[in-house]
Image: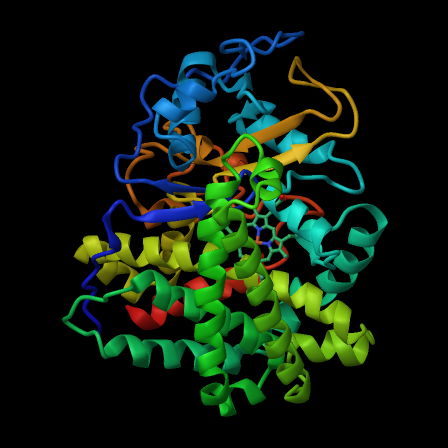
Length: 455
Ligand code: HEM
């Protein structure tokens, strides 16, 4: 048994990293909000004006957001606005206006009207980088037919339980390696837990891509995994600072150091991942996902490189932060930890509780193709909609005693539903529909296998 000696490298302000879509904002969850005073959901809907938090001319509410702690605290700021205005409100944040939604039924309905080619918000710094470097990127950055084509092809493997089952030994082996490394810390503080989990997440995806032969060559890839983790971290640090500025374009135009740092960190991340992909293509095993893409589907190497780079980037921080939170929460409560050790359904429950309370994507964005009226609220075509998963996850009406970490609430009742969840509709940590997370199954396998073995 390993004793969790958890002291996050950011003291108690543990971070979960996210963007307006996935990773623009870093946020501290130290003083998580309670869920009292939330507005009730039930309404006699016919047609409603969405409450509008207009703010002041030109700047909108950007000063208020800044005063509340800025982007790193946006989830808390928005949570408070939901308490004030209800579960749907529109806000003019200065450079962008958006509708925020925390009602689980409306959240689901938004996904149902997102169209064949769902569109999401891509942070400006990334689009600018891609334009300036004429850079081919992976799924997250694609749109329309191009996105649809590659996504459909990758779904076949990434979302197939039997394909992922074939990787069971690889997954177990990677987690064993991680635990062995972790054991060196037994009884001592883990000096940079975030980085350890980051490495683990990258290694997990790389192993899934390569298959069996990854385990035999883990040492060969070890330094590359460390290199990728370091570089990806630097990308997120610089991009999160850039993406909260009113104009990334001006920062780039003036060649300010922050842009230079971001640009060089993205370039070196993409170069490093290209290098790893070309090595991986030489080491393919039949059960690896890369062999399916390259051999079965005949995808050319440059496209594989673009797709894989973004898989690695997408996997790194999301799963790392979730693991960190899960281990921290389990480490805080010996009773929960002991129960989970004896009952694998509680491990799944612990993962769900972590994703509910600390969603690494606290907002999911959609840009709807058409005007829509949903539960009486009018949403405009082309307007940015932000689905507030953080707020939905902490609502007492959906999760009694929402602020408590209770893995057993996810135990299935014989009569249907879950023991401690009133409405599961708002639980969408990986989004929903055709543009939901392609790594969701892999992430769940990694999180559950890791927690089981670490505990
Ligand atoms: C706890 C872990 C994770 C969480 C919470 C998470 C969450 C999400 C969410 C919410 C989206 C949808 C974004 C949108 O609709 O705009 C997404 C997309 C995506 N995720 Fe994940 N993710 C996780 C792990 C992973 C992993 C392990 C991978 C890679 C193996 C991955 C790869 C991707 C990619 C490539 C997309 C873009 C898909 C597309 O646009 O079609 N994610 N993720």
